[in-house]
Image (cartoon, rainbow, N blue to C red; front, side):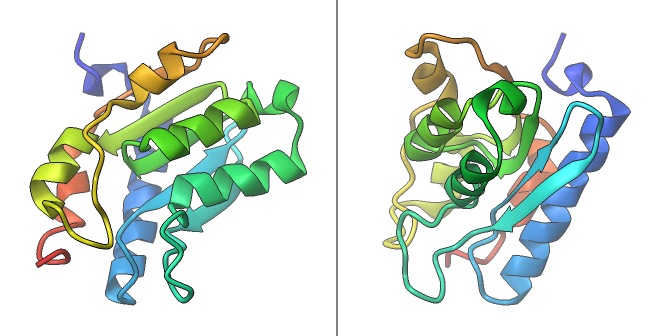
Length: 163
């Protein structure tokens, strides 16, 4: 079974929402990344786009900012019932923040490897070619991971942005 085949219709709907958010961010000149947090009942709890601007925060990745917000708002026992949907695979920093916050499930679109092919060594996004699975597998608790999914749509968000 491919990763795309593991997606429910609800998963596809939430992934498309991340694409909408990332496209809106791109249109505003913001790095085209987004993340949303959804509870076990299918309610969107939080949405986040990349936070690099306005302060040039190199750690302002959408997933990391979202997980910091979520960790302040919810306890790990609740977050283990939640899913984070992201327009691109979390880097090591973002995967670490999701692990420490207590996230139970992750669904991502564009892989880090594919993103690196698109961005190259861009000074605002020196992409790590490190799968988030490697980070999560190093932990002491399981995080369900589905991805890459809908990767062609995820890649389109970055067309022309990093040139």
